[in-house]
Length: 159
Length: 106
Length: 224
Image 1: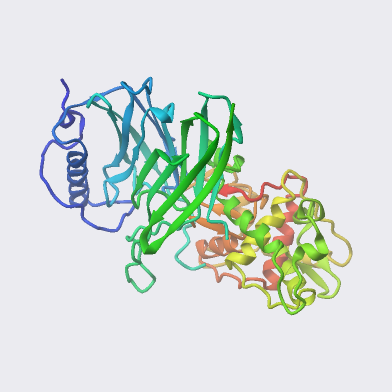
Image 2 (image 1 turned 45 degrees about the horizontal axis):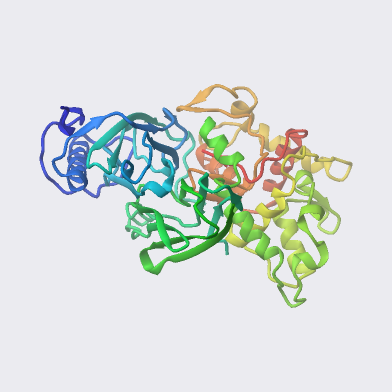
């Protein structure tokens, strides 16, 4: 059974707090390592030590992004959404943002479909992770690689 | 001033899965940006979004600074009965907005 | 701009600019000034009375003896008809009203009519568009006429037709005017940005809109 460590990019389980550094287009390697560790910590808070399997979740993001300030993101989970078999929660994490958590949605059979569409901020080219928590206690995931480019003529805080 | 835009169908068949789109007016200040003088602009975001259907919670979202400004939250719910679908946003600095929509289900 | 940005724009339920349009509608109906009148008192339902207005601005104003843009037109109405103080450029109120008025022209072709009175201002705007400026010594035309479609630092260079203003720019995470965007361009080429509402700015806007004649208004657009 694949554990969450096997598909996460960073193998070490170093617990650390997310460093509140300034998000930039070139995040230095120390900062990146800290943020990846922070994502693991955030995952542990949500999932505990339960195994996470790839599949049933579809995370949709544009592969090439106009602007990291507002990126459309959709998560859909295959599920009959019946009282005995449904998605209880959908969580989204990032590996390079200053904070790893993006959103947690709590739902149930009344949702009809396990689907969420939002717009998120992405600090840099990175991997985004979506985790679905099912009513039977299992966790499923999907991830997406995104390239974030910035506009050519950047405003400099002047209006 | 428009605090939020909600998009709910006015009517639906019983059991039909309906799409709901919500847009809230909020800067979602991350707490990571700095002023021109280098001072940190304090975090000011919407923290929670709750959708209730005739009083029963059907969808709830915990938001973090990584949610974009003027957050869009689009989801589905089953049209179970006629009544009121209510939306509540709550966040930092006492931010609290409620919007409602009526739905006729036959 | 990407497909996702375009679909953000095309759906009124997800277009963040609509938040300003709704504010504009509220302001349209709110009494203001010493005259205690709302825009609606003279102009009625904006959906009919404002149709086509954004598509033909900047337009020549006889009293000012020069073209004025939509923001200035709104402020002229406020000071002269409503006897209210003009709204500050880029203020939420002015952006909301401009967005609401511009929205009523959505789908209509830009229609800047030039006559003997406005021709000198159009020429001045054209001259500014073709003139090298700033530390980078770049003219607008060098990117937007000669090299549109090619890439600059990961972004595609557009032809720079202002069909969607005021628009929600993801970079700003808010709605802004054409002048705000042009100030960004000027800062980008390391030139002194013009102040809001100045004659050289409105001349340039006039030229840009005239250059886009026939293209459909998309306001409020969404752009990266």
